[in-house]
Structures are given as C-alpha cells and as structure tokens.
Image (tube, rainbow, N blue to C red):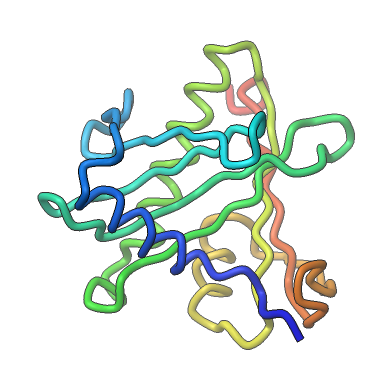
Length: 165
C-alpha cells in the first residue's frame, strides 16, 4: 500500500540540490532570513518552497503546491519538514507562519487577495498534528488520504487580505 506523501524526502532532495549549487534562492520580502525557490515540477504548476538556512544547511522547509480550489478560491497544499537535529525548537511553526505571510504578500501583489492552505496529516503523526493545529486550524476534519488511502486529518486555513483589515 502506498505511503502518505512525506515532505522530508523533498527536504533531502532540496538540500542536495542546494549543496550542488543547482538552486537560485531569493530572500523573502517581509522576512529576509526566509528564502524562496519557485519551480514548475509538473510543467505548468508552480510550487513555492521556502527554507530557513544555517549557512548552506536547510534547517526547515515548507512547500506550497496548488491543488483544487475550494469554493472557487485558490488552494495550496502545504508540506513541512525539519531535519531531526533541528526539531523540537519551534522551527516548523516559525517557518509556516513566515511562509504563509510571504505567500500572502506575493499573491496579493499579483491580484490574488484570498487563498486557502490545506494540510493533510496522518492520524499517527502527532508532532505534525500539533504544528497544523497551531498554524493552520484547530478544528481538523477526519478524511482518507487520497494518495495512501490511510486515515488522515485535513486542516484548512483561509487567508483573506480583505478580512484581515
């Protein structure tokens, strides 16, 4: 049976590409210690990857991948990973909050005033459930993961510039 998508594999791949100077990162607009990499892994779909670095070592990574809109509003599925030696230091929560702010800033500049963030977390993954509850929503919905067929929790956050004021 397939496993749930694991963002840690993306972190390892990203770290390797960074070490080989295969990536060009841009500092954040709001948070200059947050770095952005944009790519198109499926041809036209744009993936936004934000990282925190200690020199050339990724200390936290969060990715936003466009998925089906919710109620006609763009939606991004989020994946977050922190290398083991940097865990239990608040880095996941920190990077998610900072990356959502950067994504909101960039999308608003490009005429997208509202969007959703969706996190799908396996019911066995307690650390990720705590992070998602603290950063995305404290009222998840029980679902079956579409990739693995395993029980999961879906956390959804609507980011709406017009309602933030």
